[in-house]
Length: 231
Image (cartoon, rainbow, N blue to C red; front, side):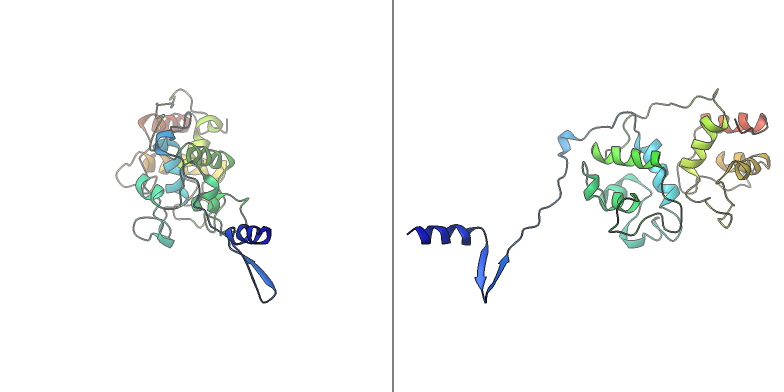
């Protein structure tokens, strides 16, 4: 009786004996998904302003994850498609998109391909956004201040967020914007302002993205008028 009870317990947990070997049945659990009722806006993060430009600049390029190509089944130029595949709300570790951009993950091919990885600030934003539930928009208060037009405080962060995913090398279409000299040259030739203000005869930038606000264009315009200093 005692033996039978022990045997029942063993078989009940999935141990099976045979040919001198023991195999243990394992179960695979679905990743944790944050309930819809608990999803919220991560403080200060706006999807349209802070998250979408990162995806458009770094991922939704021609030949990659744009509407026309959708490489590997991923389209990453709008909210609906971004959260449709590869994002597990509340769980960055289970999100394939996060695994791809997190350089500390060793089991996947890192993205963006053939380009510098995302900045620490961009990674922090994406992780916080997913953790809070990967919701649309959120705190989209206008934080732009046109009286702030320094290179370090306004221009460089704007370029890094909206442009650097494409303009990360001299061979990139439209040239590089990876350092102060290249950004200054684009500014003083008029190309930078023409592109971001969508002026006739220029290339509307960010390509495939949301046009920069009037305030952001004013910041660049004032910086250029001041001689495009490295301040």
